[in-house]
Length: 384
Image (tube, rainbow, N blue to C red; front, side):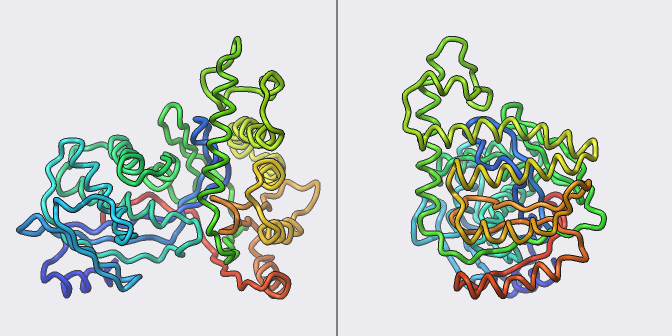
């Protein structure tokens, strides 16, 4: 991206050694299956984060975010996580992960510019980590494979950011192809490319603008509950080794609260639906695919319990454009952590404006002004 480079030169007095573009992403299905080693179906989007990096003559690191109009600086010895460094912690974590893997890293200047909608669950922190990883690979470890890079970024999440690792976030932008889905198979660490017939359709992401202060805590609590339930299941005779492979009959043999039972049942059903959804796309059975999307949202609402009235309203309005008994791709679902955030809607292009006009009613009913983005499936992260 040409307009980021002059800012980098003006800030640091040097041409960047590498400029990287990484797309945002959203998940169609399965983003809550990672801890169960289930699959995920995702799309990269045509809104990207850009990063310029140049070497320094010392062991200091300087970071400039043009989007936030903020600067940070640290030394090599001060790369540890600090709450006040906020967005820069993502960069620092990846640098530390490279060092932990025996790769020598010296001082660097970073400039960041993002066009990915912020705070909407569309992968801005993920894009920043992947961009940092690609830049470090280019400068310090050119023989590192993309799969090894994904392992390092996953390590950075776990060891230096103390977050759950979601490989589909990384794979969905590292291995994306324009106009196609990425099918992340967690157990095998594989990213398959899947066609999605979008001719005549448009994708609309709607940011509900609901404050999400509880989202991370509530989602983590659900993950912990499901893992604890599986610890009970795996001690049963003939229990599968992977949580994604268990069936609901196993739940009848353990004593867990009904709310936890519902949440684990959602994980089981969602896991079983991914391959069915991929096969439906491959066979152009769009009615089956959209049925699975709608069932998934119902499960997120009624079983996993991470939806909200606002998200349900957005999904319902989009689904009103579906034509029963036709092989249509029209569908909608929340995406990401829930408790607010985004929904996606795949609509016939000629109906998008009518859907957007319904947002007047959303603001009147709920008091939030939604922000909508028309996006297209984009290609993978790349060096410019």
